[in-house]
Image 1 (cartoon, one colour):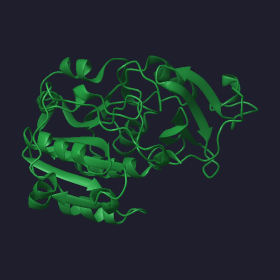
Image 2 (tube, rainbow, N blue to C red):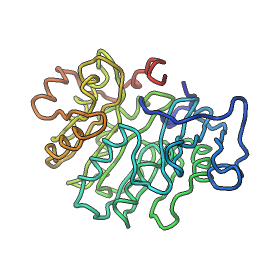
Image 3 (spheres, rainbow, N blue to C red):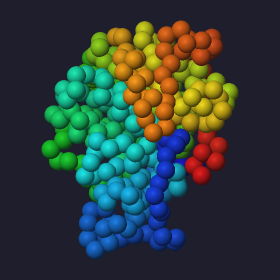
Length: 315
């Protein structure tokens, strides 16, 4: 599991990498993702969250996978930032696509940085958007910036800070979309799971704004049920996108929680999720309330980090 100093090293519960670094080697950064004779060699660096690796994608000439301590975190195609390789990121991408009229610029906040995949996606699909990324792991931010640089024309600001502390400094009704994809090691930190945290999220969102969060859980799904109850205590409109096997408690995996003060495009989300290579299911309304099963909302006083995934998740 990745190591972290209490904040935002990030780790999705699922993903896949193509290849890996040569055993025992640390590639020269000058011969890595930035170009040069060794442009397709892996790059390795120690960061606050553990050992970070950028691994070339064998199937996409400009694709790279970010791993922390061997666990896949993000995939980026520098030539095609609208390509989302990881299942959970595609599902978040569906939410981003439907958060406003196609192509319309938005103001977005990303809590958790990784390889900046989703911010790159918004910049590609919604040019002229204004975005803020918050990532606590400063060495990871530097590593990604160095080897997978952002488009200098994109309006993306990257802040090195704790997610909740940075959120508190944002103005009221600033964001159209707020994405939470924050992991310390393989677990979402406790202080980002409570009603107090979500009250800050809703304050920063515009009245029609959308909150989307990556939650990872497995049987008996107690954490996920509690997160649904917590979001329902703050937002009137909710939906959940996940693999049916995860919703049935058959395996550990990612679930994408969507919340808003305005009605959600549930039918469109369902069509898009069902059409993915690994078809997802959307729960909302009465079915989602039934799924939560009477779980109590989480407060700062009762908050706990999300459960650690079993080692087999990353095999």
